[in-house]
Image 1 (cartoon, rainbow, N blue to C red):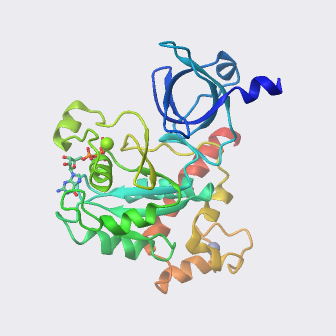
Image 2 (cartoon, rainbow, N blue to C red; image 1 turned 90 degrees about the vertical axis):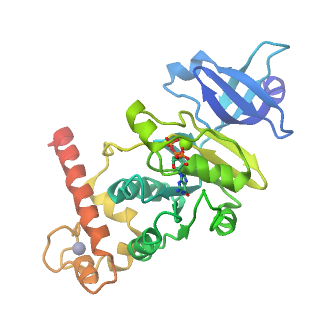
Image 3 (cartoon, helix red, strand yellow; image 1 turned 60 degrees about the horizontal axis):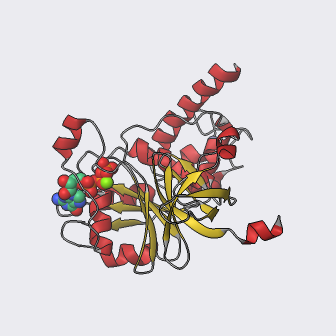
Amino acid sequence: MENEKTAFLRGVLIRGIGSYYTAKAPDGNCYVLRCKKKFRRQGISPLTGDEVLFSPGEGEEHGWIEEILPRRTVCLRPPVANVTRLVIVVAPVPEADLLLTDRLISRAAAQDMDILIAANKADLDRSLAPMLSDEYEAAGIPVYTVSGKTGEGLDALRNAMKGALCCLTGQSGAGKSTLLNALLGLDLETGDISRKISRGRNTTRQSELIEKDGLRVMDTAGFNLLEPEKQLEPEKLRERYPEFREYEGKCRFRECLHDKEPGCAVQAAAEQGKIHPERLRRYRLLLQEIREEWRERYG
Ligand SMILES: Nc1nc2c(ncn2[C@@H]2O[C@H](COP(=O)(O)OP(=O)(O)OP(=O)(O)O)[C@@H](O)[C@H]2O)c(=O)[nH]1
Ligand SMILES: [Mg+2]
Ligand SMILES: [Zn+2]
């Protein structure tokens, strides 16, 4: 058994198309693999970013994924594994949806990912980045002003992305692929927003892991909707808001969810400008939604 294991190669999945996956070994060689049936029986699908042990195929034959190593993090939207730094791309067009941004932040915070925001298309609108900085400063989330078109701000963003497996995510059309092309001198497919709307689909359809110039980063398909999280306890949501932390335990009621309870320290902090009122307003929307999910399930 031990001997068999040592015969396997180790690699990281850089893409998956249909039931074929590509693994990249440390020496840079890529292998096309299929997934053994045992994983399907266990309800596990390989994800881009997975570290795997595999047996390479011989000649033209594909090889097999033998083992998926433990995941540091896992996202289902986009479906990727082992991301430790999430780059949320926000733009003035299509109109920034900050409730969607907050949903992404909430999921990333639950897994202890580093989070940063790239305010893209600065060439079109310079007011987006300061607005975002204002909203997310108390949460400790840095905002980078960038333009994939003019190249503005790319050095700072590149530096912020070094040293972790990063994933670019955000609304379809925000400019994730354009940014990556500009950051790394690539030629990923990008698409016109009007064409996207008329076709009703993304330009990028699979997640792809790219390793270049000291960066490890994934380009993923954008989305315009992110469904509420199932099975999240309403009490857990507040733990995902870093800006609430210093006020936890200071509300009149120990169980305060910072919704409409009297004597709420988070509400008071928002009134004093220490927490952004819009972040709190959207927190309450998400809380409401999670309570409804919870009630439907267990109520
Ligand atoms: N003016 C301007 N346009 C940009 C910028 N970045 C991207 N775009 C345009 O925005 C559109 C969408 O860009 P993509 O890079 O395809 O967007 P995406 O986020 O990868 O989209 P999906 O793959 O569908 O999720 C394209 O027409 C780009 O040329 C920018 O910094 N400035
Ligand atoms: Mg794209
Ligand atoms: Zn409270």
